[in-house]
Image 1 (cartoon, rainbow, N blue to C red):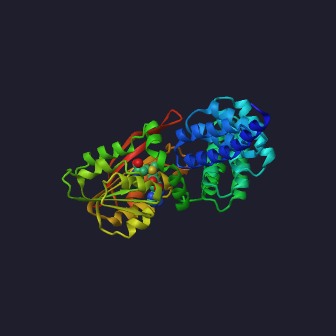
Image 2: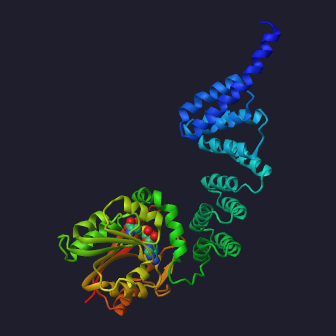
Image 3: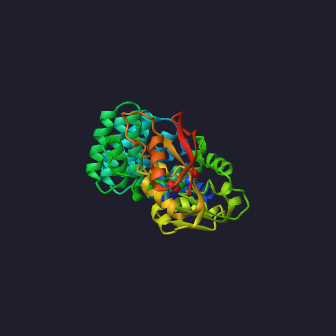
Length: 415
Ligand SMILES: C[S@@+](CC[C@H](N)C(=O)[O-])C[C@H]1O[C@@H](n2cnc3c(N)ncnc32)[C@H](O)[C@@H]1O
């Protein structure tokens, strides 16, 4: 073919490639990844030097679950001159996915040299280090993510997990030092305050702050049911058994409150007892899942003690599964439950058990942010509140790091 005709063809290919590329970007944005893949291929066949198209093609291949091809696409983008932190970050993510951890770490380092305030890159580098059990380095890398993006809830949650693991593995000193820095640098962050203090060991809170509970469970809501199933979570079924044993018949004639209902795991067992089944929880994210079960007559986004106090003599049955472990001091919530119960109404709940050891306080917050209570303390607090204890059994509530979490299942009655 004559040279002049070849030059004309090459010129024509560029606008064609750009047009195809725009079309592929639109398909990718609409979530039509398969179609976007073939249009990117056509664009890149017309102009293999389109660096941005290689990067975007990589994103589509990643979404299609083809990380090796995605890595080649990102490398092509770099080779075509798109030497950006974002491309190294993208490449690192797929390399990690395919187990090429050394190369992934190198790509994160490159991204961070180019853009030292890249919070997501610090965070994902930390995830890589955490996977390799390099927990101190992981925590330091998470801390850099938080320095770049102080309000990032996921970042704080990841940092909390790294400190929890460090503490679990026995490096209590390092965990406490990092927790002190965390709390100093983010004094208004509820997770830094609550988990930080628990790890340092100087918590003075009587219960987990509302903002902490809301933030934690909003973040956890989508995964809650599957994660708790993995942990062998049994509190809803144990409390359902306790309700059944404590007397009421499932005749659909009771006013029932699922206190701290979360995603509604207790709803199905409580529904047969209820003329009116309501739920209350601080986390809107959790409540959205409870709502989707279509089991509740009412769901309120509110703090439990305030809600109970605002509903005097309203319930025949109040059930709190795995909720009072977010309270240290129990007197206030028991008194509020006593107010909210009708005469002869029942409060059925679980708490985590703290060993009856003279060295230990009546209740204690652990490094994961939940409280455990001594049996004697639960008994005393119930009796002070005016509720009469009718049943208390010791049970495994779930497993954590393979170990059983031992708790108490309790039924108390308003006389
Ligand atoms: C571990 S989940 C248990 C959820 C549900 N009861 C179950 O068994 O699946 C604890 C729930 O208690 C809620 N919660 C904790 N403290 C609370 C409070 N003070 N007021 C209202 N809800 C609270 C949380 O938002 C979360 O949804």
